[in-house]
Amino acid sequence: MLLDPFFSERLRVHREYLIGQALAGARTRLRELWPFARDAEVPAGGVPQKPTAAAKLGPHARARAKHRRQALAWDRTELRTAGTPGPDVPTTEHRLSPEGLPPFRVRIYRPPAAEAPTPAVLAFFGGAFRLGGIDYPTTDAAYRRRAVDADVAIVAVDYALAPEHRFPVAVEQAYAALDWLVTEAADLGLDPGRLGVAGMSAGANIAAALTLVNRDRAAHAVLLQVLEVPVTDLTGARLDLRATRALGIPSIIALRELRSVARTYLPRSRDARAPYASPLRAASHEGLPPAVILTAEYDPLRGDGDAYGAALRTAGVDASVVRYQGVTHDTAIFTGALPAARRWHEDVVTALRRLHA
Image (cartoon, rainbow, N blue to C red; front, side, top):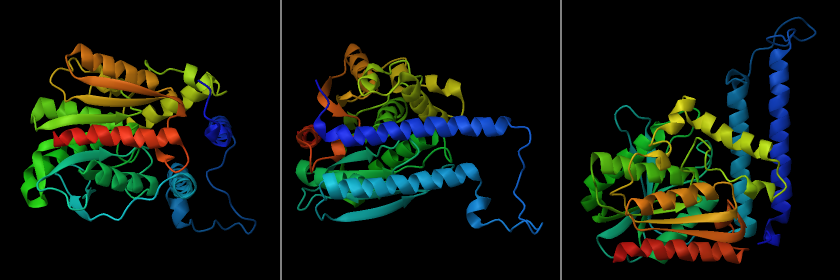
């Protein structure tokens, strides 16, 4: 199916971004090879300037900070121009400090006049493991709308980002959040017998990994997993680059960007074969919760979603995979302008309402 016209301008900007990133990487490698590079510039007066706070971060940290500011600004604009604001719902925040892990926040979005105890869904945002957060406007709005429309509590986990915190930190934080949720459910007014997990993109990877960790360790009552455009194999073996070629993005540039995600998240390349990093590569998928998997036609991760659904069904798990035609990886945020995004939201809500059964 042809790409929805809604994406035409966004596709042009995305192509320019990917090409720019590739060129910037090439320039950086050339500078590193240049034998006459100096450690620091000295001004005409001969006295080195005192480094600023930003300079003390180092060039890579400054680039990450700039990238994250740009991503947040882009997200704010997209909600304003093509998204749907979230309704006002009761929220509470909790700070978790598990032993051996970085502290992190959990925010609970409660549906108005919800039954007590309320079914709950642990939710994990997307962002290639290195961007995003529960404060991003489109993420916050989506959680609010899903809490109201599905009549479930959304328990959003603000897991630590890479490369400052690499695998398995985010997965261990996810498990710590689940363990905390079950332990504190009565005080929180939540039902520990009706829990689900959900995630978008990298967050879907973490959600899927969490179901494996939970099965292997505690077997808490996780009854559902909703995985949106998931990455399930960080080796890249399931990437479907026909999707990016159809968008006019050369495979070598798309592959470079996708591999950089894995390099940022994983401490070592061999970790891509670890089942908690690549849930598709688990030795067994038996005993995992029923799954609803959503993929997009113009997304190279569509192969990951297809393969994971097939692996779950082979293991006897109730799993469905739905591919949305004519749309891209980030479709779900455009509910104010794109009919497919509104249908996406409705299908996620329908899946989440299974927890009321």
